[in-house]
Amino acid sequence: MLSCKGFGATSAQSPLAPISFSRRSPGPRDIAVDILYCGVCHTDLHQARNEWNGSRYPLVPGHEIVGRVTAAGSDVTRFKPGQIAAVGVIIDSCRKCDSCLAGEECYCIEGPTDTYNAVDRVDGSITQGGYSNNYVVDERFAHTVPENLSLPGVAPLLCAGITTYSPLRHWKVGPGMKVGIIGLGGLGHMALKFAHSFGAHVVQFTTSPRKREDAMRLGADEVVVSTDAAAMQAHAKSFDFILDAVSANHSLDPYLALLKRDRTMTLVGLPEQPPQFSVFSLITKRASVAGSMIGGMIETQEMLDYCGQHNITADVEVIPMQKINEAFERLLRQDVKYRFVIDMSSLG
Ligand code: NAP
Ligand code: ZN
Image 1 (cartoon, rainbow, N blue to C red):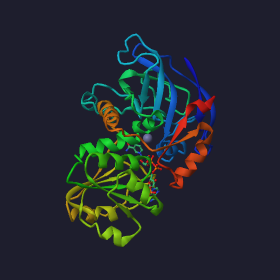
Image 2 (image 1 turned 45 degrees about the vertical axis):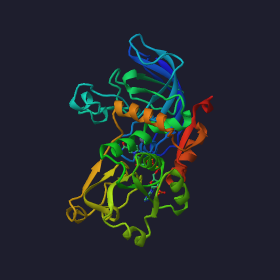
Image 3 (image 1 turned 135 degrees about the horizontal axis):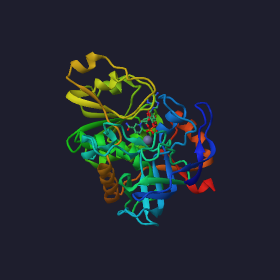
Image 4 (image 1 turned 60 degrees about the horizontal axis):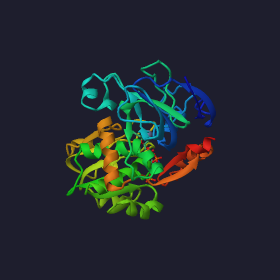
């Protein structure tokens, strides 16, 4: 067993606090990594506080991991000790269903194994995440990192990056399309960067007027404050695709009103409550509401390589581990620019 230290929650009500635990020793196909940086996803907050139910305690969050390989099993082919490796939201899957064979492990029929708060397929233990000093993972679920990218800015690509890259690719966002991004947080700012990079005309929707300038700098062609009914109305029936990356409950109707006929609004945000919308918003234009979850392993590597080629990373605020509870509170106040990333050397 590998001994680990990190920060975890012991109940839905408790703040994150120092915790010691253990992981399985690396097997022949596994790598062990010393974690350098871990991004802070809103999912970590939802799960630490059991907002989706099903959280198991103690719970160490963290699924945007960048680290240095310290050990590689005898069958490992892609990594050597000393190399940088990245780990995202899932660390295993059945590997034989249609989804897994298609490289869409996140849609594994048996369900993928999450990086934390899941039953490890290898030894039955409960997985613990990257708010910690090390991780052990099968190399099939680890990624290489382009050398030109700064590592704190890479960590958020492993969830916020792939979760937005994947639907933008799936719905073929590109030149000639008008695309809306809702919510300028961790996911939203990556969606904005990618949609801009893919050549679309991008409109950022935000509830925070103070984010307007940042949105323009991050690649928006236009910014709409969604509480301004007239500004919303000005965009009626004009969008080819809308991606919703909001973490809190809200109605979808004001945004469905902005789609053209036969278009899709895709949800990646996961508020505590189910989405609210009127069926009239769909039938009057044959619109679709869809969902999308992270992305498969091949696509995650493709996204990282794309970021290397186009010099794309997240805009981050690096924090020590000890500031995590403050960071959670700031996420709830929509006060994030635009991803907190924990410098794991602060664990000591
Ligand atoms: P985040 O950094 O906290 O950003 C969320 C943004 O939502 C905020 O910055 C804010 O943007 C907007 N927002 C917050 N409260 C709002 C409200 N009451 N009304 C309207 N907008 C509001 O969160 P994140 O890490 O990007 O995660 C976003 C969501 O995606 C979370 O629910 C997370 O669990 C989920 N997620 C899903 C997947 C997946 O695979 N589908 C993967 C990762 C995360 P403005 O200030 O611009 O309004
Ligand atoms: Zn995440």
